[in-house]
Length: 280
Image 1 (cartoon, rainbow, N blue to C red):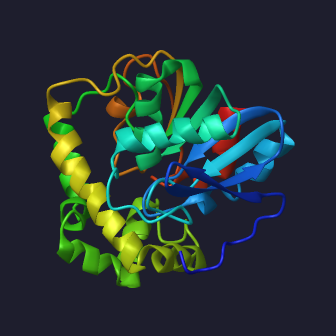
Image 2: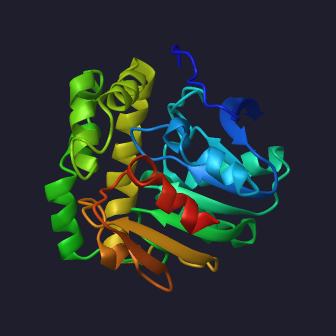
C-alpha cells in the first residue's frame, strides 16, 4: 500500500512475516485478547473508534489487515475465507495469543466463523457483525436479498469489476449503500476507503475475493450449513437496516442475536459503542 498509515492515538502498528508474506496488525491495550477482522472494502482502520475503548476496558485489541488488503502484502492467491482464517491463526501464534475473542465485520465475520469451525480451540467467543452465524444455511429468500442488495458482488468477480473499483466514486457508492444512510459514514471516511481500494493491487484482490465467494462458497451453502463444528459462544449484532444479512442468517444456531436500531451493515463505523458493549 503506497499510502501512509492513518494514525490512531494509543494504537501501535506491527509488521509480521508468515512464511514469505508480510502482514500488518494494529494493536492497542493489554489484557484479554480480542482479534478484530475487517470487512470489504475496509481495512484495520474501521476499528479506530473501537480499539481505544476496548483497550480502556482491559482488552488487548488486535486488528490485522487481511491477506491482500490494507497494509498487508499483495496476494494473488489464497483470497478466500479458509486461507484467511489460517492466516489469522498463524498471526495469533506470532503474537503469542493461544485463544481470543474473535470479532468479524461483514466478510471478516465469514472469516471469524470459519476459524471457529476449523480451530475451535483458538476461539473463546465469536462476535459477528452483519454476518451469518455458524449453522446458517442460505435459502431462496437469502439469495433474493443478496441479489437485490449486493448486485456488486458478481460484478466485482470480473475484470470489469476490478476496473470499477479503480474508480473511487463507485466504491464510495457501495459504502453508502452498506450504511443505513448517506450521513452514517463521513464523506472523508468513504474517500479514504475508496482511495485505498482503488490501487491496482487492491482492486485485483477485491476481484479474486468476490470470485472465490461465488465459485466456492455461495452455492454450496444452499446445500450445507455454514461453519460446522464451531462450538464457541456466539454474539451476533445486526443493523436494523442491514440490506446484506438477514436476521435468520445472523441468528442461526445458538447465536445470541441483537438488532441495532437505525444501523446498517457497517456497524463498526456506524455504532462503535454497540460493538464495544457486545465485547466487554
